[in-house]
Image 1: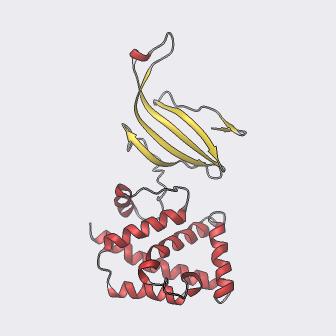
Image 2: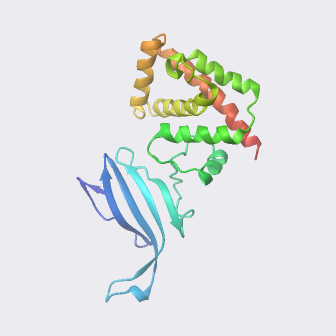
Image 3: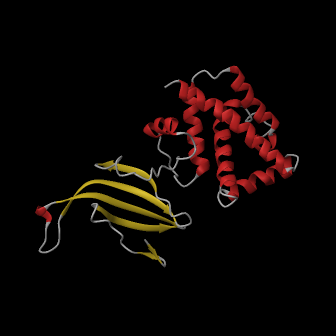
Length: 226
């Protein structure tokens, strides 16, 4: 729990969740807490003794208050997540999300752009041979929206694939929050559209819808492989 610039220890001793360390960095609280069991061996006088059975690292942005869990070890690692506080929750449906999180760790769980980029790279690796019609859609996105994907040799399907994911989900985060989240990202896209595109805000919405169709097709390939 936050109190001014400091914190109040809000350990849940009833459910054996005990805070080990708290740190505030740029409007985000980082918390390390342990799962524990009562153990008489560690009792001291009237104080109950506990033995650690697992531990977790979480980030809690002050703006949202939502717990983002990005490391779990030991007992309770899966069962202790009733809120499903996965940083990729909402980016894809549960079937793909579950597969992705088994083998991919996101370094910055507070960044939709980084998370979606990592997701895009995973999808690209796991699709295998990409059907020609889907590849054509991806290539057209790069060509149609050069203001964002560039005009030089770097504007190619392989490089653009994860960037399409990163761009789409960052814009989605902005749109679905009524402009409250991913604002810097959106404003950067607007600036590029004003400078190198046609300057029409609807151009960004068209790009968003084209990317949505492309990503849906790619995600469906992963689903059908299950």
